[in-house]
Length: 444
Image (cartoon, one colour):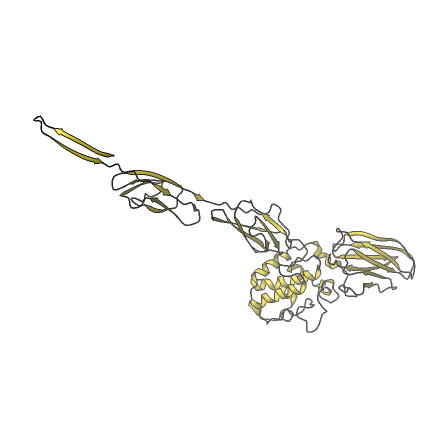
């Protein structure tokens, strides 16, 4: 750059002088920006400075439409975006930027060992490294804690699938969502509608073990939510109008309800009666659905479903529970036909008496916890054998095997183990006389 002068002299000696100034223009400073974008987010805006130049010639990744002579445009594809900028004075320069697409990876898999239905404090862990974790639990599961961390803690109800959803957020604010659905292992004891339909003998009188475990006693008219037997009015027991929710608009007994065919609220009718019978027959081992933990709560849950005619979810859950049907259902035929004292009392021990010769055996507390106290009182001296069985009739332990003296009480203690916990049947033999009864497991 600068002034360039020249003097021109002709052959005749004449001359003249002139000059010009050379100006050197600087090339443009090109700056291309391509902000990273989320794979599931908005497009990125590719831009270049300086703006307002005479021409922009872009080179874009394969498959991307060239934007033409513009200083900015939207882009979604990853790759290098290059441009040559030419000013009005003809000077040019080039620049480029790389568009990066952030794609967080979210993966959820079912637990390798499926949890038991009704269990609490279950956990599910995913890899760490994300800025945030947002957990959602639906279906047969209940969220306990875990938002903001990579470990979810959840509880389970009984029956039905568990649906878990996770949304992760990376450091760039990008999110990804993943889901997993799995089932739990249903444990406990219950019986199908078919069993109760064909075994009315185990629930047709107040003296039956199953009926005697229901709240209150049998009344006429029946007490809604109380004790019922096979011929109890379905409508009166649930305290709902006849023909509710598409059910038959005719008189209906509880055993007739177990034989109903159909879905939705009709299906709930047969499974509801079966569920209440199961809860009474196996008070320590019936797996209540989420939201209920005793007979009365289960009854109210069922009645509310009939009142709203919203039966589908509950009948599906109860049907799954009732399918636990096993040998223990048939064993109900072999249980003692009732108890002479209320097993739920904590004030006085339940006493089972044999009517012949006044052979007596008391067993308390009932329900029991860790220790059961037996008192044997026999009218005759002789050999005594006291044994404990489960509801399937399998012998669990010999509590006493020795002699008793007439009219002198014999006290025996039995320490309950985890292997023998549950509903217990006990039998005492003295000579040819037998006394038997049942014991329920109390809370630990």
